Image (cartoon, rainbow, N blue to C red):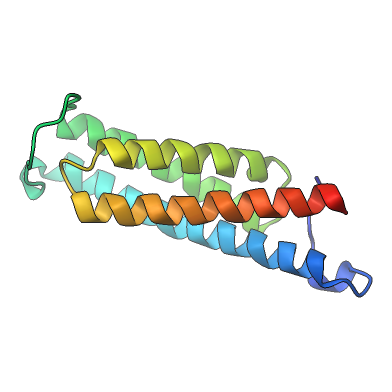
Length: 141
């Protein structure tokens, strides 16, 4: 897996430029989603009454615990998103892992905040797709 420094570093092919753009997209999207998760975590920690309980699921976790989960995931995702924008090789795999964990955590958070959780899951899916497409493009090159 090669770290892309700039689109100008390629020999006329548009595939590496596309991969570079996908990496930037994934990094910026992951960083943006992470800020939302951090804010969501702070809201859950500061005031448990913000979230309204809907239907009961088989798994129930205290909102304070959810606040910490979202805060920690958000901070790790923010660092990973910055790493992706800076074209750090480690950030590709870590980005996919964090996006998957974040999607699963938000799936479990659906009872507290359904629409928001689904939106965050969708953006995590875009990050996973972009990073996988970039890694696939790097292997073919």
